[in-house]
Amino acid sequence: MKNNWIPITLMITICLTISCKAQNIVPIYNSPIQGPPLPHYLKDVDNDFDRIVGTWKWQEGNSSLTIELKKVERAPDAGNSVMDVLIGGYTYVKNGVVCTKSLPMPNLPMDKLTNHPIWGGRDWHTH
Image (cartoon, rainbow, N blue to C red):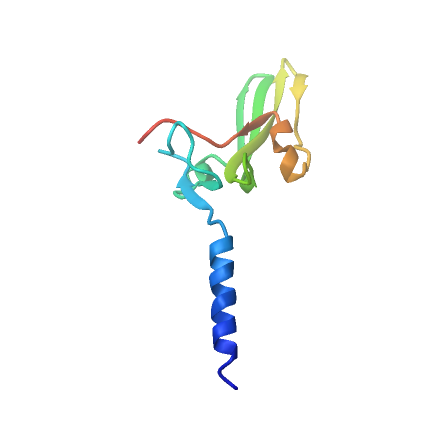
C-alpha cells in the first residue's frame, strides 16, 4: 500500500511534462530572420544591451540632447513569446529652449512598452 503513490506521481509528472510547452531561448543577435518558432524568448544572452543602458548626453553651447535607456527583460512579444528590449526617452534643448521632451520616462505596464519614444530589442546583423 505504501508504494501506490509512485505510479500516481509518475503519471502526473508525465502528463505535466507533455502538456507544458517549452519556451525556446533564442539569442537576440543571430536569431533567424523569419523568426524563431513560437513561443520563444529573444534573450540578450550576452548582455549586449547593458553596454548602452544609462543616460547619454551631448552638449554644445546652450544646446543638448539627453537620452535615457533602460533594459526590460521578458517583455511581451507575439504568440505568448517574450523578449528583452530597450526602452528610452529623450530631451532636446536648442539655444536654451526645450524643443521636445519625453523624460522622465513614464512607468508603463509591460503590455504598453511600445508607447515609449525609444523602444526596440531586435538586431538582425550578425557578429
